[in-house]
Amino acid sequence: MPDKGGFPHYMIKEIFDQPQGLRDTVTPRISLQEGRVCLEQIHISAEDLRVVRRINIVASGTSRHAGMAGQYMLQELAHLPSDVDYASEFEFRNPLIGPGELTVVITQSGETADTTAAQREAKARGSRTIAISNVKNSTIAREADGVIYTLAGAEISIASTKAFTAQMAALFLLALYLGQERGTLNQEQVLQHLGELLELPPKLETVLKSSALCERLADQYCQAQDFLFLGRAIHYPVAMDGALKLKEVSYVHAEGYPTGETKHGPNALIDENLPIVIIATCDHNDASSMLRYKKTLANIRGFKKQSARVVAIASEDDQNIRELADHTILVPQASELLSPILEIVPLQLFAYYMAVKKGLDVDRPRNLVKSVTLE
Ligand code: F6R
Image 1: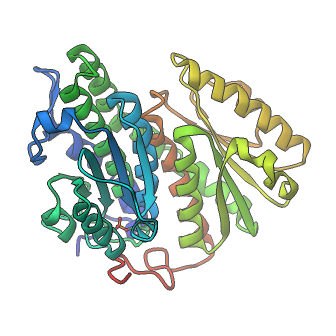
Image 2 (image 1 turned 135 degrees about the horizontal axis):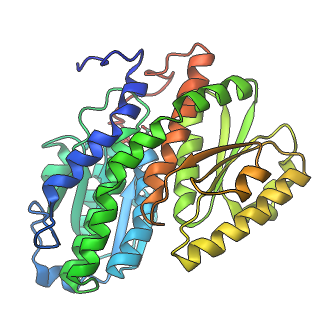
């Protein structure tokens, strides 16, 4: 068992391991000289990759949230439509998949029974499979046509943190690789995306400095019974994972929801007793990000009118959100596709400190196991 590196729990150690986990996952797979992503363990020819029509992403829990973010990356960079499934639902929905499709299975442990079963189902239907796993030689990795190991290091805490950010980085690399092999990205574009990816570890170090602020927020909110986590587009999976972390380690009910869906029902719940955590970052160089941001600002105004307490995750230069929200946690500027890797960190810290304030067994929440090997 690795030691806790001076931290009181594995979860907080692993949250702080994230900049290194990202470096280790990204650096061996890229060549800046050639402007290329090199995924040597994907044993599928460039010819076969060029004719892929669709991607199916299958995973459970936090790994599925990474897959939801990956869906945006694959569509944007490799122009491939993708679906995301719960591994536990996959074999029951008669998935209409087959040759010419790629199934990407994501699992930290590589042993999750639902996910290995889904991989077998996809293979039986003629789909090639790529596994993203944090454990060398795991069942899922052995059975796949290709593997990308997340090199985040052993994850001991039951709540997945550093594997999640490494999975999103691995999906970004896969999307770039497919874009490069399929010709949807030229060398210059690959280089620009790689540059942005390499800027993430120091930016993550900056986000980790919000630890004390997250602890103070946990002090203020530890009596709350319910939380609503909101995000739009690629930030919605971040909201989902923030809610999942809070549920599993602090036993507080939390729901992740797409921000724009609140007016279709959840608004009825929103008042001073339902704190809202909302992802409200913005990439000024991206028109769709700006549109999302403007809509998010309008949503926050509405929530404040309903007396909700709002905790916002915003970009570092933002003034508007700071004026509107009760609390704002700033994260460095990043591109729309990469900012989820930064945004999740304050939510992990918040969940951690909530569990600590409640005196719970942070690393081993009740009724959960690290690797779910039963279906
Ligand atoms: C949440 C968490 C779980 C796992 C899920 C899948 O923090 O850890 O939701 O993500 O059980 O596990 P893996 O990734 O090993 O397949």
